[in-house]
Length: 372
Image 1 (cartoon, helix red, strand yellow):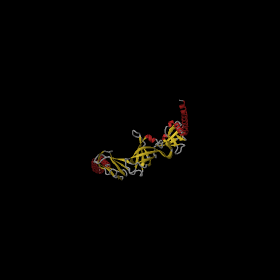
Image 2 (cartoon, rainbow, N blue to C red; image 1 turned 30 degrees about the vertical axis):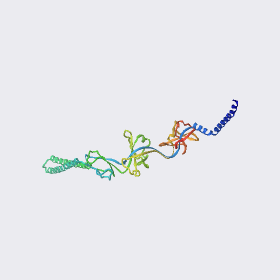
Image 3 (cartoon, one colour; image 1 turned 120 degrees about the horizontal axis):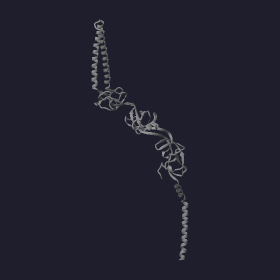
Image 4 (cartoon, helix red, strand yellow; image 1 turned 60 degrees about the horizontal axis):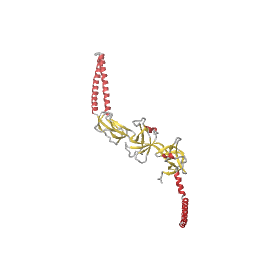
């Protein structure tokens, strides 16, 4: 029994020494990875984004409609029937050209009747005035009394007044009869027929829409957005065909809000550059430029944190987060223009801001690339 124990003891001592040596070797060679993992686990992982510089523009976006700057409805001024609309829809014409003809038989009959009344009044006046002249001669010869002569003279004057009244009535009907022809009020085009030939028309009935060749965009803007900074002269970007926007300015704002939505009509002129290929009634994407800066210092909107003392961001430098106060002054989409002691390329925290503290050790993960 004892000899076997003496043989195993040296082997056990050798195994123990080998194990101690291996443990010492592994611990001495693998210390750096263990320490790096420990350091990373003690830091707060945060998402960061780089500060950039560039143009910034704060806008309010709406959808407008293309109209003529001078756009009116031509109305019927007499009762009758639409006889013809000589100018087709979309056709241009000159000022004074007939654009609508109204057939009014009743008006023609009234004119004929008044012509007859005027002729009768003239004949009656001529006879009575001749009779008054005769009675005046008889009065001079003392054949009739002065009362008889004065009565004849009075009848003559009354007939002359009746004749003038009949002529005035005829002139009035001639003017009304002329209203059966509606003419173009200025150079332009017929945009839309609101009636068809053969339809009955009453005074005030819209016949067609007529507009000039100068185009503008009309936008219904909510009252609060107008108060936010839209006024005459405000810069506007018009995206008419989904290509490069056309710049313009607000020309006028209606003086009264209307409708349940309390909107105000804002007009923006459309010059020759932006009107190519456009038609009346088309929609236009309108961006009212409230603020604009050609070269701004931009940080992600998610990086800005509001506090009781003001706004600020957390910058990441040398593995630590540092609080930096900023002054936002413009916003474009997901970016905010700020006044701050920052440079292009500086990294700011954009996530988990509630857990970050000034001077805290952090492990930054850039959102510009995929997370490892």
